[in-house]
Length: 255
Ligand code: FPP
Image 1 (cartoon, rainbow, N blue to C red):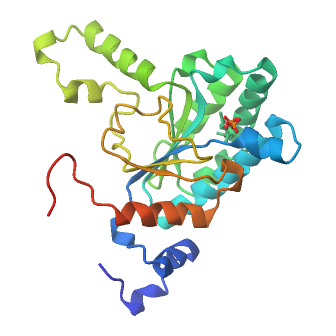
Image 2: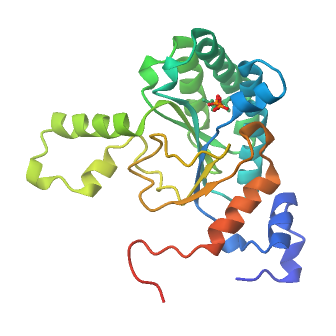
């Protein structure tokens, strides 16, 4: 649907840029998931420590959350720390935990003012207590917000999520014959969140890396060589534009 010129003045900065690129604001992906890769490579290129790459990645994430929210995307999910990331050097793991805890505390007021609803996905009971409490406080404070839902995947693994769902189903005594795809979907970490329509991966790797593997069965993948610290508004718009140029078939034939 084309917006009339009369409505054009109500568009914000990012919506105007989107329309200029030919993006249809009525057909945005409802849920965008992001594998934020390349912080380490960005740091190495600059001769900096890896943690400085993550710190720069945090700045990028602030911008992307704001852009996505202003554009009108309803759900943004980011892979902040995978269940496999514990294998990294202790110094990097500790540094990431501190960075995410500080971000959760420092950004809460801004997120709340911007009507952002915060969620987490992952085995949160296994992360350091300070981070867990900061996340729980953020979730509780923003739970009634009606703007974008921002999901932080922390200590998250797609296979672990499916295992956790199966454990719940078994614990509830659901007979095997009654288990359907809907049963499994209803026991994932955030069952009311729609499946991602678009998955963005930065830094060029063509891998899924165990991220939202159940929910991504039909999502469109956009991979860019740009590293996460370098990713900006124009890259997000380019991903959305590419998404809109694809024909989603969900296994059917589309004429
Ligand atoms: C992957 O880059 C990135 C991560 C494992 C961590 C993502 C974390 C952030 C963006 C920091 C801030 C997050 C929050 C929620 C405040 P990599 O280290 O694997 O990069 P490389 O492949 O180039 O080494």
